[in-house]
Length: 225
Image 1: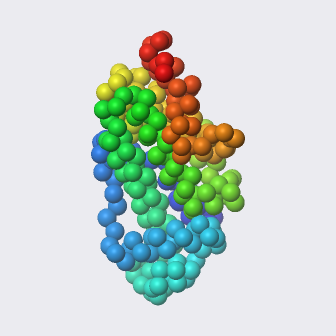
Image 2: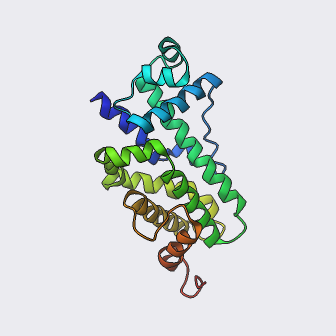
């Protein structure tokens, strides 16, 4: 049971927390000391190498160059506390990176906002070594997070997060619908890749946006390239 709890905690990176999605700045950064950050980064490397279940605190301590006692001192809750910190840190990094890219193109139109935001999310998702390890070796843990009620929560939070950038071009209902549909498409291809679709490539994402997102968002004729 503990192994599953640890893995579920890590993959909560998929469940963008509402508290981090209240503002377009995505001010969700987790404050870590230098030692804490070194241990979190070491844990991520271990998770990418062996998975969460097989990684021990001794493994993380060795990877970080610290003693096991130091890791316990900084994370008194042991492995559960460390995994929780890793998950929160990765969520914050994910949101902050997307927010920064969206700020860069906020004035360039709805299509550009959608393309850049989705591509940045896609790059981050597909290059996250620990998360990709889980998808490859423990899909029964990750994929339920993308289905049924869990998926509804992911989509609601994605809509809340993206809303401020989309609201410049759309009314609130349309902005929420566009964000939700963009998230559905991105997560679908992220969890089940398809030939010819690269979720980290803006040209590939642009084709998806023009084909599947804009037609259902803008009045007929306004989405033509």
